[in-house]
Length: 422
Ligand code: ADP
Ligand code: ASP
Ligand code: MG
Image (tube, rainbow, N blue to C red; front, side, top):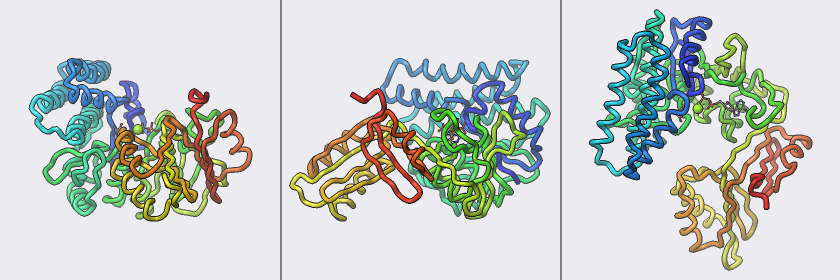
């Protein structure tokens, strides 16, 4: 079986949905499992719904309406007859969402988040499945929550591999076109969980691993994995082949084209990963597979924006030692800060982190009891794998460098974003 993952960008409008059909015509679809994300920016739109819900905002109705209108426009474009069963199916999902918002009593933000945000993938796969059937392609829609079992860490759930493996090997039908949702799972009480933002690539890898799939293809709006994000770098070049190791490193440092959790399950079973353009499906894209250093070493650039650089120094000039460091890391973990770079000297310690959950104010209060805390918000972290002098110069040009770290393969530079330079 082959696993195909179509992300939000590939199904952002009716043309995108039609294109999925066209891609399948070219690739064949007899023994394929499609993992599909929410359409376009639906997950962000549902995050607004959640915010309005918790703020008890009068805008709640209209933010739900926005999501409904967006999908409705796609449906009207795709289906000639507005009596088609898909309209009722999608309405039913919105009714479930509204019922949940009206009835929920749980004050747990992360729990509510997962129950609401999951609607994006349920709606997109419902539309896709109906559209394929409408075009004469028989599909088998599956609710991923009956397959991918997780703990109850809402918004960042951990997969229970044993249960998931059991469910998938017993119940996924072979030799048909399966369609399922990326990003979602369910806990032991069957409440919906999610695997972390952008987690649909990971879902594809979970199915591939449990099915011992032939390959995974993630269909993107770029030609494949490039040596830089083409949104930020003009002359980005396609990498034709890379090793799992290189791909893991790139994803780890923040090349968002592949979700970092995707590679490990694939590597363990040596399942090849193809990253291909949904606009040019006949082009080979990038192949990620076993083998050391498949690519001649081109410098690869990764940028992470909106990072936070925290620098701690001891109040009394004492050393920052193992004990303090483990305490600092304990706190970073507790406040869900993702650490991307560490640098320390005798009496100071700096970390560049992603404060995705906005917990820095609390962390700062706690840290200030023991350390002098200084920080820069909104910094950018540039990573250059296989750097050379020219590449380093290019990144440093016109920027205020706050911190730099060099290892054999990798150079990392923290800079103030240009608008913040005084
Ligand atoms: P999806 O639709 O599957 O969610 P994403 O938007 O998450 O797709 O990923 C595709 C995007 O990743 C591209 O549009 C591109 O801007 C970005 N990207 C970041 N780093 C790279 C890279 N090294 N190569 C290609 N694309 C990259
Ligand atoms: N829809 C989810 C998100 O936007 C998952 C994904 O697209 O991978 O984060
Ligand atoms: Mg995405």
